[in-house]
Length: 231
Image (tube, rainbow, N blue to C red; front, side, top):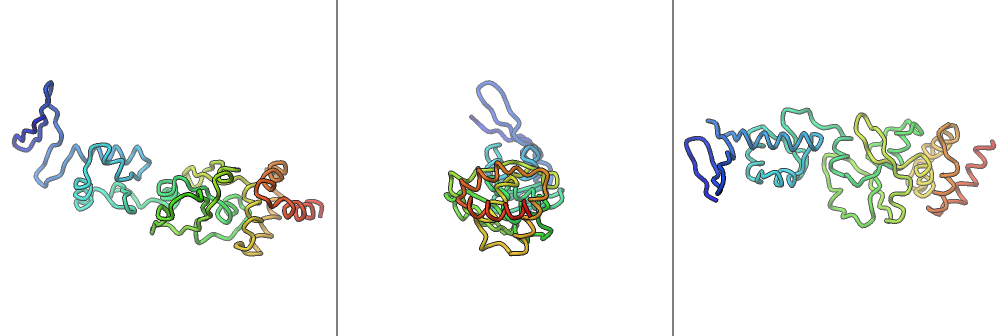
């Protein structure tokens, strides 16, 4: 393969055809590369990893140049968006930066309306085997819960968070987790959550019992729930 530069057009020659790689305009902007970057970022929901751009044929140098030119904006280490777009919301960042995370405990309680206390940090369940460095993101305040692999997907579902679909534990797993992590939850939040769950028409006591056994909080859950349900 030979590369031929003619005027302002870079042309790559193969045995069978010529392919225009990029068109350079006066200020050094690479129009084709920008279009490719835009397509990649849009296809990824507005934020793309540097690895996604590299796979599309965009080098790290090109990415830096587009950032310096004001075409791309760095969201977090290794993640980029189009500079013309508004700053991503926290839920967009969460979906992109922590794709394995499952919304849990305090954040799940707030999502289901079991708590009116807005968490200062996102409570996120992640596999216990997950590297701590992957949660080292400065753009999000996180409260991680490291969960053993056999329990990680118990009660996992997806729901809409301000227009973004996120993984979240269902109501029953969330209530069981309140018992499991009792020492880490404010007492007022804990009591209010249980009462809210009892009044929730969407509750599933069969699943609650099943999860409680799996999470080894069955006795605590049944004793207190019986009092609340029959009170």
